[in-house]
Every structure is written in structure tokens, then in C-alpha cells.
Length: 163
Image (cartoon, rainbow, N blue to C red; front, side, top):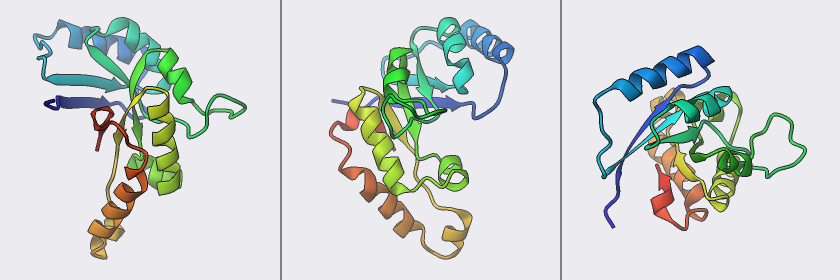
């Protein structure tokens, strides 16, 4: 089976509901038609997921910017894979450098998040990469190997994962 091209717009922690609505209106008005061999997804901030879902073309998929390594339960502020799936999210990011570096998420946490996402039926964009310090120290390949090795056992269907 041929792999589809994948295009993702990550909005980070930015924007307003008005921005999201305007962005969707402009995107929808564009002349771009989604070819059969391309998957397009958008990753708005959490509060904007449902407004975007209601405003964007139906062939554009929703992506969460993160997912909890925990399931549903008493985890204040966490967004479980089950909740994301329930509201129509198809993809989630895991391992983004912002989360690795600013939230101290390590390879174990990333692997747990990936497992939870895939088990709930979400697809995942696994972000890998070295810091500037790691690059300057010549450790790029070691860092990438470690990050990829930590998630390898979590992936049973590569059609559900983009690295």
C-alpha cells in the first residue's frame, strides 16, 4: 500500500477563536483540493479544536498538539486519547521539542503517550530531534537513535504513525 503524503499545520499555543474561524474561512475559500494521495491535518490549540472542526472542510483532519500518557481519570489538565477520539480528533503530536525541553518529557513518557494514542485509535506524529547543545556536542545520531528506539515497540501499524 502506497503511503499518502502528509501535511500538518501546527498552530502551537496561539490564536483566538476569531483567528481560528477566519483561518478556516480563508482556507475553505482557497482553490486547493485535497488529492487522494495527500492527508491534510490542522493542530489548533485545545480550546479551538471544536470551532475548527465545525468550520473546516471535512477532508481536513483534526490533530491534537499533545495527548496524555494516562487514560481518562483524575488527571487535572490532561487530555486523554479517549477524549480526543470522542471529539473527532484523528491525529496527535507526541514528543514535540517544546514538550521535551520545556515540560521535561523523556523518551519513556513519549512512548507511553504513543501507546495510549494508538490504543485509542488515534494516529500519531512522533517528533524527534536533538537540541542545539546535543548537535554541537556531535550527539545527533545517538539522540535520534534513542528517541526512535524508545517508541519502536509501541508501533504495530506504521500507517498510523508519521515520524
